[in-house]
Length: 435
Length: 173
Image (tube, rainbow over all chains, first blue to last red; front, side):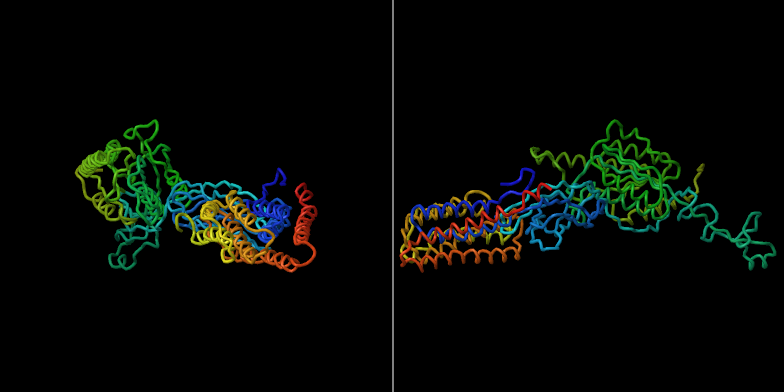
């Protein structure tokens, strides 16, 4: 009945109408039961109408996403592009639910009548958690008038979407402890060509004439100039601990796991420092070992966010954590975002501190995090093991504090402001035998 | 949603069951009473069909209802036949609406309205056949002669519709 190359097939409705109606009429004629014809007549009419709307064209459908890269919580639409829909009366789309992807309609299924020039309605979707997600996989079925024939359901593959962590676009007022670059927004300890007033001093050869303070020069009888502080950038190294994920993640705006906090904190800090003109590098401790060298600008921010979205938690391959060269030069601000449940990472952090680098540990472990144990694990044993790990963690955090490394829980983009101010003040104090 | 299905889907499932049961019990006021066993079998079949509209369940259940009527009736043409036709039409239309998608697909009101109109339209065919049968029941020609004529006309229209369809040419392009 149907062309082998066609995906049009008679529906169960058509089969029922014709089979039951035909058998009933045959029985009526054979047994002499005219009432059976009355009962079967509506089915026969429905079947006949279904047959009369037999499709003559083979439709083609393609699914398209309006965006292939989004931030958590943003939304896009999955549209269905279709041609040769002249025979189609109704379209049904059923999108398979994905973890951390909210759909509208909620169940991901949508069906509506198709007018002469109307388009197929889109399905709206919003990724709720960073990461790589396959979205848009769906089944499509087209039905002819009177539900006589159905095309499909045809499975359309999904597309990979890169879901970037959310950004708060916050600009910190905190200063970098040891700015060393050539350009940037941080106040330097050196005098230079900046805008912030430093002092009034005698004119030296090479000073710009527009810097001369004529009032002081006339009063003193010697040329005096206004000196300013240089403005420099800072190098920031973000070390992201993705060795494991603790706690339960329910997507953006809801309960967060430790890795959620880690990724969002790293994204917020990268955005904050790159927005201030600083050079930012990213080093992820994960099986993928994601790394971004020092760079500036929005393109570099996009690269860091993309790397963050690709993180899968686990132990790094072929490398010991305490042997990693973090490529932190003098003056680099090192931000380690880690729940510090790994003694190897704590050791590596202390080593960075002892090199004289300003190191800050950001603790992303949400309060009240419970252990994620295997289904067949004894709950009491798991609870006990978790408590022992927390004791170990407290010991590591105390060790870091004793080494002069501040540990702050992540509390939004302002988390580092006060710590950086303290580090900057500490850096300006005179030291015996210091550099 | 209730147990993975929208309220509209549950209403349609109820209509499938109600339609089949109505078709079976339509003759009770006129004295055509099915046995409890038949009622139970039909109700079970209707429930299965309501949850599996794409399978043969509804065809078999409707077939059983028609078979029961075939055993109950002879050459009579009671009003109950019209009510039974209405019940079967409702069950068929509701099952067709259910088969447009999974239970998680909400029922499109426009589609439901369209099928309600179609159900009424198809039922008028039953009314026409019933009226013709009633009108000619006292005449010389046997009733089945007219009914066979109507059925032949219907089958002929369908065959013409299929033959006249340009499907083969269109698909080969």
